Image (cartoon, rainbow, N blue to C red):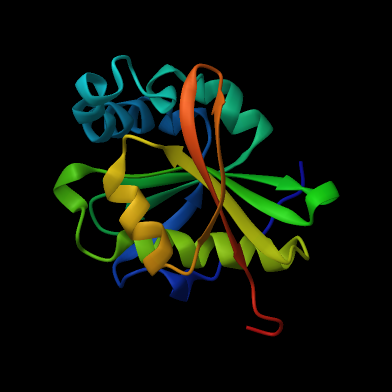
Length: 169
């Protein structure tokens, strides 16, 4: 898998994006569990990110964590997958620890995804969310994403989004 640089200025001061290794799997699991547990009752089962094998995903995806420069504490992670056939970078998961939500880290992760997409010469970002994660259905359009379809996949009702990247930006 190719390595792509992430602009260090695309995250909040005092935090850095770090390419995840197996060293980070436990922290990613902890953040995913904390962030997604609230959806179990709503969906009727564990959300897909809670069932994921992050050791395998670190090998097959571009996974970045956002780490505090002083404490080393990880506040979130983003899993990216390049799809050359669709000229797209897929955001397969973006998660921020509940205690760190609302501090602009989601925007920083989106800038990280844009940096990687441009390095891969992609023209768009694509992602999906569960139809019952209604908070995301509000957030993603505010970040410039447009809903493209809804379908059931792997037993989950999903809403798919796409955001075209502006040339040269």
